Amino acid sequence: MQRFLAACSALSLLMAQTAATQAAGMVEKLGKGEGQVNIVAWPGYIERGETDKAYDWVTKFEAATGCKVQVKTANTSDEMVALMNEGGFDLVTASGDASLRLIAGKRVQPVNIKLVPSWDKIDPRLKDAPWHTAGGVHYGVPYMWGPNVLMYNTEVFKEAPKSWNVVFEPMDLPDGKPNKGRVQAYDGPIHVADAANYLMTKKPELGIKNPYELNEDQYKAALDLLRVQRTLVGRYWHDAMIQVDDFKNEGVVASGSWPFQVNLLQSEKAKIASTIPAEGATGWADTTMMHVDAANPNCAYLWMEHTLSSNLQSDLSVWFGANPSVPAACTNKSGMQTAEGCTTNGMDDFAKIKFWTTPVAKCATQTACVPYYRWVSDYIGVIGGR
Image: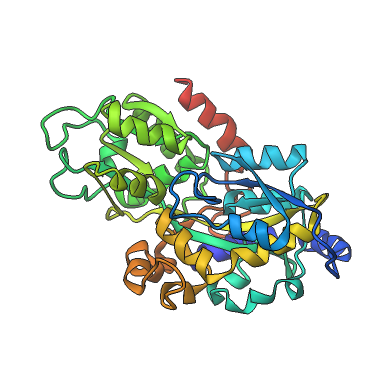
């Protein structure tokens, strides 16, 4: 984990001067709510009881504040960055592979933590995390975090798969049938890191220390593995609900996924489970960040404070299968979550998760690394069969 903090910190140092400049525009005092707040969010992150009436952390907020919550769902970090670049939104629930880009691109503004009364309740491991902090300035409020899991069909796999090889290499699965056409991969350049993570164990001679910091040889090996995977993948998924349908109706039996899809399928009594294989996993730590030109800053701050309420944190962590940024939500019985549930979600595995971050050329573990723009163009090529 220290390597990832160092990598993020390196990029943060590059942005320190920008941070100091932008900090001057920080909101100092709140006024009356503007009547609405427009949010870009991951699927399942902002629920008002429409998917499941038991999960609603929007309705009471709207009634208490008069701020109508408008949500635009985004399925990838690149989509979130594009939407924030376009403008028209107040907040975004950004993962680490987007948050630093948004700071560097001056798309988000510093957050005045004095205007977020529940800030002190946040997990100390997240308060100053380098994916939302630059030059000592905070650019967001931690929301949720967790691992990218291997989701699998329990009728095909009587025991949990021990390796990510079931989605990367051609083989017959335990039911005697090939994995070709029955596995999926994530439709986003950050998936290169999943290949690199697998290669850290599969080919230790490559010397990969950090799946987001790859020299040319390591990067080529990851792309070669992804080209092999391309021959197996039935669909590259980015829409969580389509992936759910594929597991139910299209014969998909294994894929990298989020706990959200696992929970949905299990709630429908599908023969589905998830695991973190021996090679470990990448993961995400998401932050609510405020657009530099937010039209509704008062409602935005009210929402950021609301996201730290232990009831929301508790119920969302159950709904999404994630870990709350407010640890008390695991134990204070404010919602559905329990200490055992947080343990199951990986609350104690923070140091083991290789959190999404933006690959940069100037890196901590190599003389030079392949930057993210190469990941973007080359992954499009992989998906296209090149």
